[in-house]
Image 1 (spheres, rainbow, N blue to C red):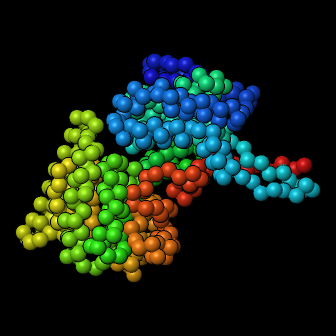
Image 2: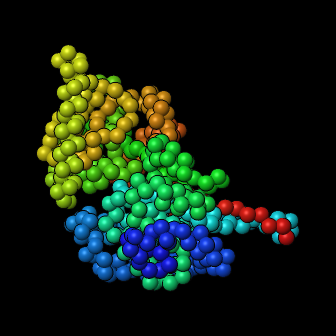
Image 3: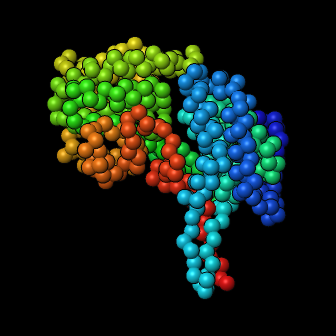
Length: 431
């Protein structure tokens, strides 16, 4: 399905719509301006409809129970007038100019944004387009494979609230394998917004027209760092919060914990911690079972692959103890590793435990500087300030409590940058 010009179109009209899209975009941009106040009003109205339960059926199809409540709360918050206006103030503020300055500086939209959306968080594609709308851009969106119609529903509801928005949105349910269509969309863009790592960046750069701005988000990794006497029980609430975070996110977000680092050089202590943490992770995982058979199958396959990899490592070591010790739990696992490299875990409740003494923290994390995002810090209160500063110097962009690693905070940056500012350009006008 395609959504363009404020209406739905069948997929077999894709080539026709793409062929005429350049002329349509030029006409819209030459004759219309998307009023920010009206966009904010529409977003706020949509958020109030979500809060009133109008989209509960759609949310229930994505998640149940507490997870569904979190989805609803996140949507209501991100769409609210107070939240959006606060972002505009923080991200698009300009220094006051002298009245007699010969040049006036203004922020203007980049023009046309091409969003290549990721599918690791339901609703993310629609929120990306909302950022493009708030900054006055025309938005072309290529949906992720597993969107299931959610984004189309959100954006069509937004256009119903403010019809002018429909002139600035074109959504295509196009597979990434349709290279010709992707190239046509990219050719129309002044900026390409995409999620992913080096491979995604290479593919995007190859299709980007000359001069187009590449706006990359992710691939990033999060981790927890534990410093202090964890045996004492003083951190138990923090560890339970970390376990809940791991289970509830499935470790699918850039902010999710993939590794738990311990401030120790002792392998024995790392193994003791794994045994201590596993029951907490089991309890949390029992509260967040797979949402459907597909997710259950993915979890099972990942667990099997992880066990096979461990067996291969043991065999390569001649049957001796390998470089990883995996403790299996019900619906989860804790794996103790001998190395200290930050890496992606097997996901879905399978956390890696590694040793990282404080004196080695900065040099080790600097090896992964380009992918660092969130650190969930568990430490004594008097140590948090010093360790936070060290983590930031290592290149981490967010330092939170372990339970809050994936929470949204008012005014926060994303991957160390303000998105709205990236979607605009500063222009100079002689008075």
